[in-house]
Amino acid sequence: MSYTQEIYERVVQKNPHEPEFCQAVKEVLDSIEVAISANEDKYRRASLLERLVEPERAVSFRVPWYDDQNVVHVNRGYRIQFNSAIGPYKGGLRFHPSVNQSILKFLGFEQIFKNSLTGLPIGGGKGGSDFDPKGKSDREVMLFCQSFMTELFKHIGADCDVPAGDIGVGSREIGYLYGQYKRLTGLYEGVLTGKGIAYGGSLGRTEATGYGLIYMLEEMLSHAGDKLEGKTALVSGSGNVAIYAVAKAQAKGMKVVAMSDSNGYIYDPNGIQLDIVKDIKEVRRGRIREYAERVDSATYTEGKGIWTIPCEIALPCATQNELELADVQTLQANGCRVIAEGANMPTTREATDYAIEKGIMFMPGKAANAGGVATSALEMAQNSMRLSWTFDEVDKRLQNIMIDIYHKTADAAARYGQPNNFVLGANIAGFEKIASAMLAQGVC
Ligand code: NDP
Image 1 (cartoon, helix red, strand yellow):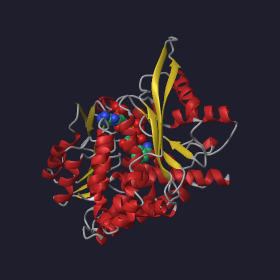
Image 2 (tube, helix red, strand yellow):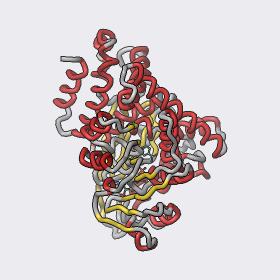
Image 3 (cartoon, protein in one colour):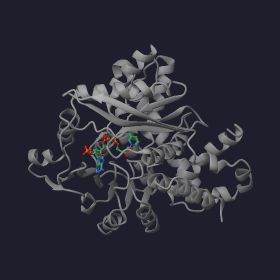
Image 4 (cartoon, helix red, strand yellow):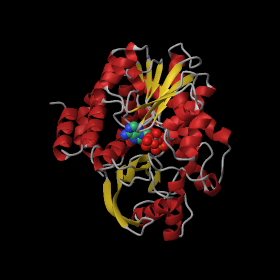
């Protein structure tokens, strides 16, 4: 049995109730197998893979809070500090009812490779809670965030672990979390990223993941002799990543005809009017269906189904496992030739394998959505220097980072004889740097 298979079986045995984590480990181990077998003795002697799949630390804690009727609720909070070989743990906080240890371990594991690909000194981590901010008042969200941070602050710090936002954690939540951290520690430091511009945030961080996705897409298409202009695209989700992916896609001359939320999707053959989506989602925290009530040319359909709309480029930007085999088959039959993941692991394993096998250009999230964490690392750098860069300065660095990630990914894929397999390329390129740092630091 190969080393990677052995480790995967052990992971399944030790984590039988963590399907998403096992899925993420399998995807990575399968694709780095060629790189492992070339150096197997060295890695086995150091038990490198055994250490790589075990978080350095996982904390779970009680989060009690009062609602507006003075009823006490209890949620569960987590922080998974997965790997600090190349820098302080870095990765978002997710507040969503589906959050559990499996999901956060999958996200933390993916984050190790993504952060490595950025070329910046950041390790991998993830955290969050099964708390649902949807439908809660600002006061309730604040009380929850204060309670969450009252435990979390013991485990984080500017040089140790720097959380950020993710699903359900936007600028409002980061503000409340930061206020409580400051109150508890008396420190004004860059312990969270995604902060407001008035108190240490970086210009360009809000836009970074979505913009970065499109910069990566542009580089990928240009190497295939193609361009973004005139292409029709579907973008799932209507949160932070989706909105700024649509903004940059439209600025580059693409036509985005559909977006979604967890209830359903809108289709506007004239092209999505993003200012209306932003008003519904960012200002009024409403539902995507309201778009069709305001725009005559649009229709709203309840439920899944966004991938049945014909397009050339599909950008899944909502959540994990939202793009299944049948969806990719439908996309392909309708002429889709490119998939780039804005979300983390939005495509199932079978769907990913099918896309690559059929020659659909497929860029995995750990490369395509790395612009967010990369810009978070730029925010950390600005905080350490007590400086603020201009939007253009940050955006230029973001563009260079995304172009660099594309080349690292494509080069690794080509080095291992599979030039069109960017999943393999991204995993290997990310892994090589981590492995060399872990080996250099001895058994720890
Ligand atoms: P947001 O909370 O801002 O938006 C999430 C969007 O996805 C919403 O439109 C939400 O709909 C939809 N959604 C969530 N869960 C589901 C579901 N089960 N089915 C269908 N739609 C769903 O999150 P982000 O935009 O920040 O994150 C989106 C994805 O991108 C996540 O996978 C995240 O991990 C990843 N990511 C985010 C980064 C960032 O910088 N924000 C960086 C890198 C990756 P609704 O409003 O109905 O809940």
